[in-house]
Amino acid sequence: MAGTIIVTGANGSLAIPAVRHLLTKYPDYTAVLTVRKTEDTDPNTKKLRETIAKFPKAQTSIRQLDLANLTAVHEFADTIASEIAEKKLPPLASIVCNAYYWNLARDPEFTADGIETTIQVNHISHVALVLRLLDSFGPEGGRIVLFTSDGHFPGKNGLEKYPPGIPDDLDSMLKASPDADKLGRGFNRYANSKLAILMWGYALNRYLEKDEKLRKITAIVIDPGSLTDSRALRTNTPQFLHYVQRFALQPLRPILRFADPTMRTAADAGADVIELATNHAYPGERGYLKLLKREPSSPESLDEEKQQKVWVKSAEWAKITKENTALASSI
Image 1 (tube, one colour):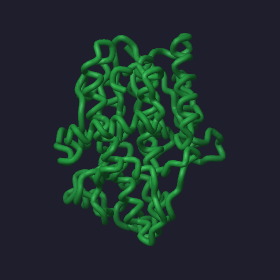
Image 2 (cartoon, helix red, strand yellow):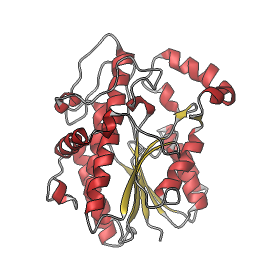
Image 3 (cartoon, one colour):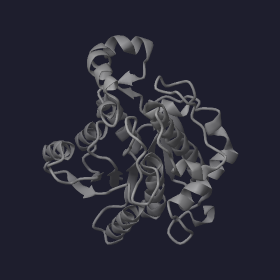
Image 4 (cartoon, rainbow, N blue to C red):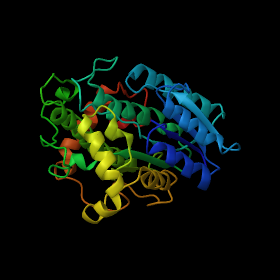
């Protein structure tokens, strides 16, 4: 049965073709599409609006959501929960936690909450959104789609200078200091956020499976691949990455794929994400996927003791309490 699908960062390189795929193939779903800037002065939001305008019968709305502000995330969750309770929206079928941030070119930046932006936008705010909205899913359950990257696995990404890892002092992940090596340190913060997402996803699935009312909700954590046409390579990155994308990755992708099969377009990845969100791919299953294949994630990501530490800290960071989540027993 169709329901509501929330997509964060819905004006992104992967998200726009994902929305197009959703509205083309599964038009019965209601799409709630969040962006930081809803005005058409943002060219990416304008492109999103032009995309959905091609589907005049589609049930869609573009909503403002700044993941760099936890208060705004909780208020958004309250609004969605109220609209579902009042039957203004159908029950949730999926939350696609697509929005991301990285900064490989400047000193660290911090959110309105005083938290380093990478970990808050990529992970903490999505934790808040998911855990606040679990009881807004319908009785048939649904799917949570989280995003990781090969950066979570030491030695797998060419931008890695410092191996990813969850520190003993988890609160140190919320902090960052200026460093001359902006690319190396910035990518390490990004990779660590993607490792935290993956480990939290494993813990989330364990808790969902144990809960009688929520066990039909499944979480998939996907590495969507190396998206050679993504504007991520041109956002908060050094100039040389712009040139690599323009003169190597884009024109040579068909050849480069022989060496690295994960290289592909954002549209291909977007289609996969919607197949997962609608539970058509891997129906009822849980866990980690690389593209749409089952592969082992990094050894550290599989450490259940560390997963639990990430789970506990993530709830604390996201201001989740026993009173504001349906998974109260896990808090």
